[in-house]
Image 1 (cartoon, rainbow, N blue to C red):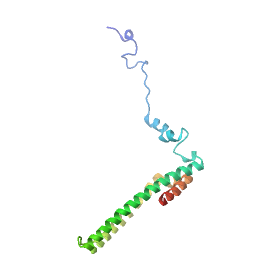
Image 2: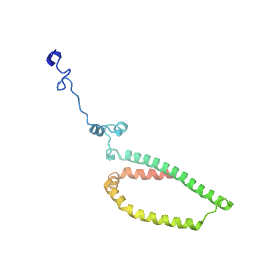
Image 3: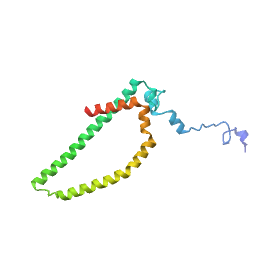
Image 4: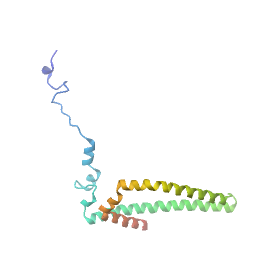
Length: 160
């Protein structure tokens, strides 16, 4: 039987230097190869301060316009669905197909208002904690040009 030296070092020996594997830390790799690097170039990053004022306004405006446009369309669809449902309910009520106990509806709506007020008061500290953790105001302050472009684009998207 041949020894490890006779067979050739490194073929079956796990401690051999012939087979060297590189360990890749995926978290470090992901930090170095972010998606915006592929889209905007190698010098890009999450900090909008790397871009000129015009680029920041354009990026904020375009994303704001898209968000406003989608918000407008979804809002119109929701308003149409709710209004149409209420209209059909009124027509059915006046035609005699449906009898609505409006006193009970009013009572249930008032109950729901009270529950919402209680839950809103309980949720307010959680929301404030979340805002403090995320530091949304710091982001807006650091990226005022991008944020103002987003707000302007959002209003334009709502108007279009």
